[in-house]
Image (tube, rainbow, N blue to C red; front, side, top):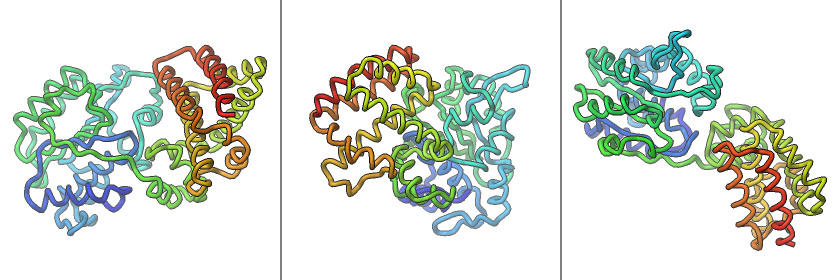
Length: 376
């Protein structure tokens, strides 16, 4: 993988290349930022550049033996660590036992999240972690001499999933790194990472992608209409993994639109039977789609405000959504927008913490009746 294959982040690419050209490559770097923004792709591209025989001014050459080995994920100096579900029956104890599946998902779609990784393995709902066996294997792999005579690069995806034993062993390695070894940690959040690990890494903050960057990528890669790509990019809020999910499940977005319209109309009429029915419809969705529906609602609320106050010039809506909001957006205004978004954000928060969906959506629709009337 080369830098040119990574969406956006041009300033970060230049900074990483400058490190190598200046001969000041930090032995431990953490690419930190929101989910689905291409951090893993950046790390792999940087590893390719570090191992390339003839790197050019702005990228690896892509054709030398080292580049080809990295591209095929067969380079002996490139190592990966990632969360797995330990399973004695399947003889899975550490990342190396899942390397074929890992290679397959990156080659198919390098912008993925933990949920999609576990779906790829058919292990949804199980506890994926980076355990103590992983730390033993890290020591074993890094004890070997460099095959290429260049760096040994270890990419650790989601170090926040390390258990305490594994994290403490990594800390020792970061304190006394093996010669010419580069650690690239790729993290969505640092809340559960040992502060001592953080203090020993150079943190590179990777922002969310811009909607226009995502739209261009989605239209080119997935050959979808610009309208569909723009809508998915806007709804995903800089998360390519989520945008791809939305495109692949476009029918789900239509269902969300129908449910949202039904919910808003029931809230406006304040008919108890209609409110009960729509709350049951929302509760009947599986958990991921319940959360996605709430995100979709937040998207429509934002677009309503743009439609109201900016004459719709920057609206990212599909034709059916715009047709509905031409009539309904006037009920979503500065009198109630903050509370509406807070209500949906809170509902999403509580679903993440396993709230009862029937009770939660019943509460949401009742509050909506008051908030919609507030905007009249």
